[in-house]
Image (cartoon, rainbow, N blue to C red; front, side, top):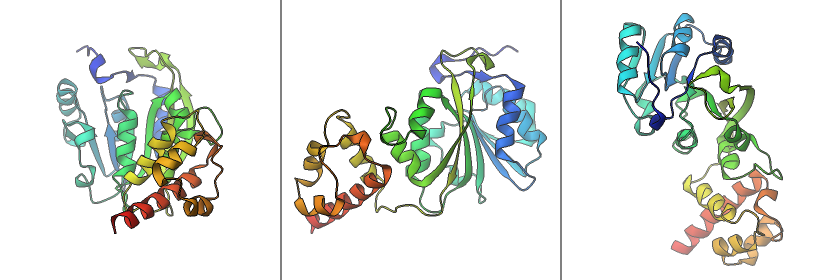
Length: 267
């Protein structure tokens, strides 16, 4: 049965077996592992995961037709759910940390990643994420300060996770062929990272600073702290710099000060 990919769901199925095996190798799957695959599509990667014989395999597939086909093909070898990953509570899938594979729909890939970062406390439900992104999005995720791709996504992605770029993937490796190249990144939770009372503090700070990316940071600083000289002296930042000039560590400090300032205002 020929599957017609749905553009509305951002479906581009990975078909190159050499690339599939390279992705599987990153996961280093053993027989004790629990695996989650998001957006398995036609099951090309799923087959190779099954061949590694992990303890359990969970699939999340939003497309009803693909869901039925996967359930019919793999039967009791998988646990499959016809759900929207943005609405799924992954913590309910397993009491053991998961290794996650995902050929994510590019139109919601950053939303999915943000969910898995911002909604996790120190008790991560995953031990490793192995995810495919549009190449330019991957470049934004891995970007460093003082580079053109550096921004909110770079800072939030690198807050709790150690990120590794593995390789790029040609658009010729997919059906249908997308218009862009892709990249494979892996993410492993850090044991130590800056704790906030509310993850939205970092979201708010980075949103305000990068809303005028090419302007000096004096205006966003004033918006957040009303030009509080004590905060400025404590942070020791130059207000003539631009948002891309500040390291992620500086943004973590600013977000901590923002939380403290908000608390004092409420008292």
